Length: 81
Image (cartoon, rainbow, N blue to C red; front, side, top):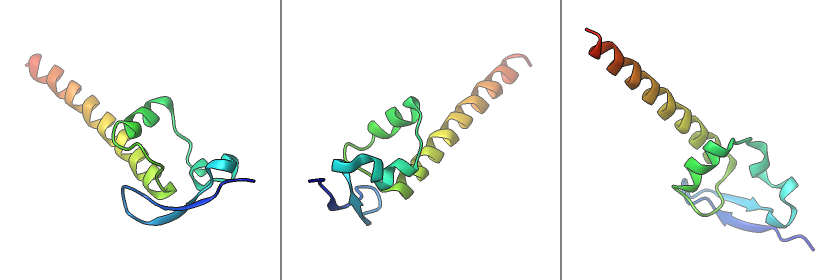
Protein backbone atom coordinates (compact mmCIF):
# COMPACT_ATOMS: atom_id res chain seq x y z
CA UNK A 1 0.00 0.00 0.00
CA UNK A 2 1.31 3.46 -0.91
CA UNK A 3 2.12 5.81 1.92
CA UNK A 4 0.47 9.22 1.58
CA UNK A 5 0.94 11.62 4.41
CA UNK A 6 -0.68 14.95 5.20
CA UNK A 7 2.20 17.20 6.23
CA UNK A 8 3.25 20.84 6.49
CA UNK A 9 5.87 22.67 4.48
CA UNK A 10 8.76 23.76 6.73
CA UNK A 11 9.14 26.97 4.71
CA UNK A 12 5.59 28.37 4.37
CA UNK A 13 3.87 26.12 6.95
CA UNK A 14 1.14 25.32 4.43
CA UNK A 15 -0.35 21.85 4.37
CA UNK A 16 0.12 19.41 1.50
CA UNK A 17 -0.09 15.70 0.80
CA UNK A 18 3.29 14.02 0.55
CA UNK A 19 3.16 10.90 -1.60
CA UNK A 20 6.60 9.48 -0.85
CA UNK A 21 5.19 5.97 -1.29
CA UNK A 22 4.07 6.86 -4.82
CA UNK A 23 6.59 9.55 -5.72
CA UNK A 24 5.53 9.80 -9.37
CA UNK A 25 2.16 11.12 -8.14
CA UNK A 26 3.59 13.53 -5.57
CA UNK A 27 3.07 17.28 -5.98
CA UNK A 28 6.83 17.87 -5.85
CA UNK A 29 7.31 16.12 -9.21
CA UNK A 30 5.66 19.11 -10.91
CA UNK A 31 8.87 21.09 -10.24
CA UNK A 32 11.94 20.08 -12.24
CA UNK A 33 15.20 20.82 -10.41
CA UNK A 34 18.81 20.62 -11.52
CA UNK A 35 21.49 19.08 -9.32
CA UNK A 36 22.65 22.59 -8.39
CA UNK A 37 19.13 23.71 -7.48
CA UNK A 38 18.62 20.56 -5.38
CA UNK A 39 21.89 21.20 -3.53
CA UNK A 40 20.89 24.81 -2.85
CA UNK A 41 17.54 23.70 -1.41
CA UNK A 42 19.04 20.77 0.54
CA UNK A 43 21.46 23.16 2.25
CA UNK A 44 18.46 25.03 3.68
CA UNK A 45 15.84 22.31 4.26
CA UNK A 46 15.93 18.61 5.08
CA UNK A 47 12.18 17.87 4.89
CA UNK A 48 9.81 17.83 1.93
CA UNK A 49 8.61 21.20 0.69
CA UNK A 50 5.41 22.12 -1.11
CA UNK A 51 5.60 22.67 -4.86
CA UNK A 52 5.08 26.44 -4.50
CA UNK A 53 8.08 26.75 -2.18
CA UNK A 54 10.18 24.55 -4.46
CA UNK A 55 9.40 26.93 -7.33
CA UNK A 56 10.17 29.97 -5.15
CA UNK A 57 13.50 28.49 -4.04
CA UNK A 58 14.37 27.58 -7.62
CA UNK A 59 13.78 31.23 -8.56
CA UNK A 60 15.78 32.41 -5.53
CA UNK A 61 18.69 30.22 -6.62
CA UNK A 62 18.67 31.76 -10.09
CA UNK A 63 18.42 35.30 -8.72
CA UNK A 64 21.46 34.65 -6.52
CA UNK A 65 23.34 33.19 -9.47
CA UNK A 66 22.52 36.27 -11.54
CA UNK A 67 23.61 38.59 -8.72
CA UNK A 68 26.91 36.73 -8.43
CA UNK A 69 27.51 37.07 -12.18
CA UNK A 70 26.70 40.78 -12.05
CA UNK A 71 29.06 41.22 -9.09
CA UNK A 72 31.87 39.53 -11.05
CA UNK A 73 31.21 41.76 -14.04
CA UNK A 74 31.12 44.83 -11.82
CA UNK A 75 34.41 43.83 -10.17
CA UNK A 76 36.08 43.33 -13.56
CA UNK A 77 34.76 46.66 -14.79
CA UNK A 78 36.01 48.45 -11.66
CA UNK A 79 39.46 46.85 -11.92
CA UNK A 80 39.84 47.96 -15.53
CA UNK A 81 39.18 51.63 -14.80
